Length: 139
Image: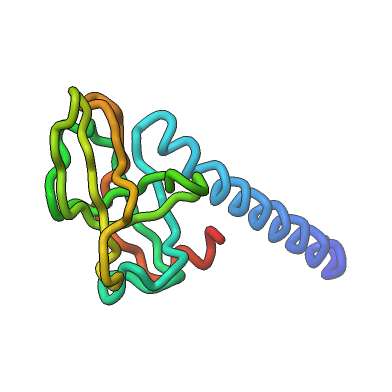
């Protein structure tokens, strides 16, 4: 095979492998979350400093709200904007058969004004690990 043809084949293979890598990077979080309950949440702000910096990512696993405890870092939807955020649980109370979860970013001066209300069997993403800089790739 000529050198020119080998270069074309190498170029094609490199593009194919790169495309497969990008597809896997995009599809893997969805597959992991939908089938196994694992997720990846990029850290977008400095609210969890010094534990996590913007650009890091939290690895999460879905757990029933009944198993949550003060100190867990959970990923929740904001009641006002529906944006996701990851903060530490500072208080949990039973209210009318539901769990009232109050969270606070480690760097924030106070807890969220609106607590998160959820039934005890609802799955909530709980942080199990932090991966430095991986959030940049996701965002």
